[in-house]
Image (cartoon, rainbow, N blue to C red; front, top):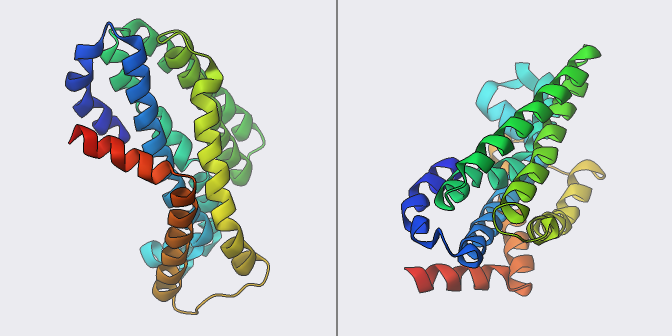
Length: 223
């Protein structure tokens, strides 16, 4: 989805190839939107990982639930970094896209190797999720710093802020689910209730911060 979105936007953004500030603005608008969407799905998966696995694969796959939840923790990072291709191509910097892809691949290979050495599936899964997190820094460097002459913090801080606020919205349900172990026995009902409550809390938090209003205003202005 993010990769497709970047490709669709590339022809539109290409007209700003010589306007670094405009391209950086649109990049961060897209990054913030994808971070919001990614965090929403990420925490729903963390909250209801067992229900999702049960619904999709059946109770015989229950041993995979911890692995699913660990991998789910990387959803937001994966979504954010997948806009790189369209943005750097729009800026005419395919050279930076190649370098970013190379370093991101090396990070993934290194962490997969580290995770595989111990022959522990949980450790391997943690290393894969960590690789997606560290790959985000390559995106920040090759887009914000090299392509648009901004600091890495200009890319990273908005993303980390959204993740932190999304976690804050998830705390009540995380406590209810994993501390008090309160859940509905029916997997479908439990997933629906937890997902709807988290979506509501998520909406309240980002409405209060003004993020949703700002993004909708930007989308409406361009519609």
